[in-house]
Amino acid sequence: MYQVFIGIGSNRGDRLDNLSRAVDEIRSIANIPAISSVYETESVDTVSETTYFNMVIAIETPHDAPLLLTMLKKIEKKMGRKLPSHGEPRIIDLDILMYRGVAYEDSYVCVPHPRMEYRRFVLEPLAEIAPAAVHPTLEKTIATLLRNCHDTHKVTRTEYQINYSTIN
Image 1 (tube, rainbow, N blue to C red):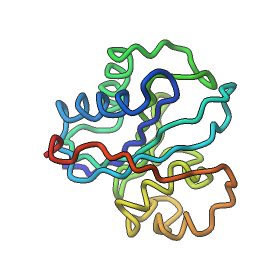
Image 2 (cartoon, helix red, strand yellow):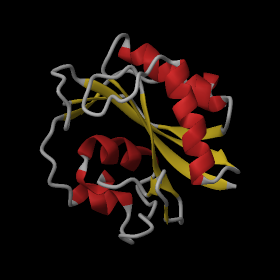
Image 3 (tube, one colour):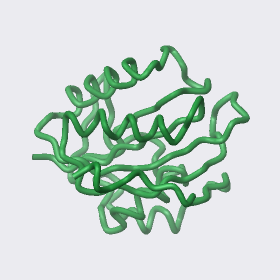
């Protein structure tokens, strides 16, 4: 069984409902032992002026990275994400951030996620649920990566929380 961290983001439509729906969909394919708060974040590398809602969940799965990514892409499509959408507003974005203790790359998927150590909108919620997790190639904890992150984009923890009792 792998422990995997997944970043979830939305900046189109009802952002909070989109996150909740994505968590429900992921729950149908994996156990979810931990979930971060919801963070409102400035757009990074996008053409949108709308802020994102972002969060991170930990899942337990027997699936390897390519199969899990395929499953996540199906969830995105089911929720209405149109491809290609790099840099455009999106109803949902599901990214594999890290398989705990595993580094893997092929032409389809790269874990840990490239650039995650440079993005505060990833590190803040990840540090909330797994500060001691170690990035498998940088060999630094998430808390250390967050402390050393130079990203100045605004990341604010909201009062919103996906109802944890519906997850377990």
